[in-house]
Length: 330
Image (cartoon, rainbow, N blue to C red):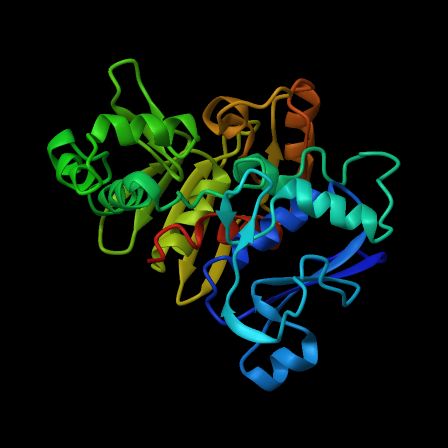
């Protein structure tokens, strides 16, 4: 992702750093339309780390300066953690800290939101910059990953008897863990406490059907979620959806790392209802495939209460990859 001018922001990581997508996502959210050039650079050895000023992975440089470097920091390839104001330790600075750093480095606020990021695409699907990878505490991540894998293997949510042994390892019940996951918008539950969705998967039919290599068919919550499934599972898929305006089909096929869209002019609209809330109600029905940009703009004109923007295929795939790629990492 990049902007034509402005501050240069470099995110330095080691290859396959699990916190790289989180760092990129939070940087993008913190920018909020401010002009900057953002790049992700992989560092492979100590010499390169010293040359670039990498103090652990990930390191975020604003015009070559690390605003979060501690006194006496030395170049390192090790995993880097950041402590929030409330003491929470995460794999990247939080959005508030990044915004403060950007302002302190002289990056001015955008004068108008315009169409450039209204809303910010990653903010729509990424829990307000916090990412969709559940924390490890309290059995959240292990149960969340179990739910995601069960959807991928069977096309449906796991039954309670599948989840209880996993939750018991953390000294909790499945209901307790699921309730916390739902409160943090990693899953959504119905009135009976059963799973309705575990982004990117839906337990009920939607507009977006995904056939996973091997035969499993699943529903996804939205277009970005559908594109996130191959990134998360590292498998080939066939996505079948329809244009909400024309009713014509949109098909996305991934094979050996290559993606083919049909029709070739297809795009994605990303939008979000003002006021926030869980993605399932705030934006999932506003993230759709369209056969063309003209069709997407026509839909947007008919839905003025859902501000958003049209993005091209590469941008949609990039958002999906950043959002869902790290979810099943150990």
